[in-house]
Length: 98
Image (cartoon, rainbow, N blue to C red):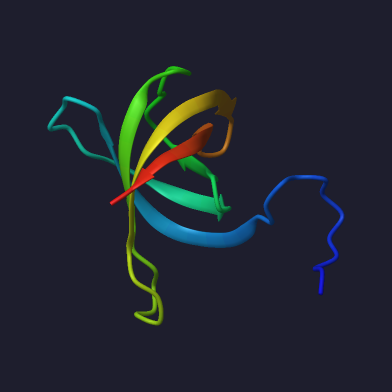
């Protein structure tokens, strides 16, 4: 059985629109953002803080409903673009689940 979808990505992206916290590796600073979508190996979120491509961050996504467990992961930033409405649109590759 295969799932049909228009994107030609390796993994399906699921819309989440959930709050996310982002902590740069080696830092105690925590930034808030909004997770836009999530796949098996990647995440797209918005934040008022810019993160450089290649940098490592720790993320925590807590769903609004306790139907699924929170996601804690280590992510490498692959893209950070200005998003006029929300600060920055940031894409990352999940390197490790915690």
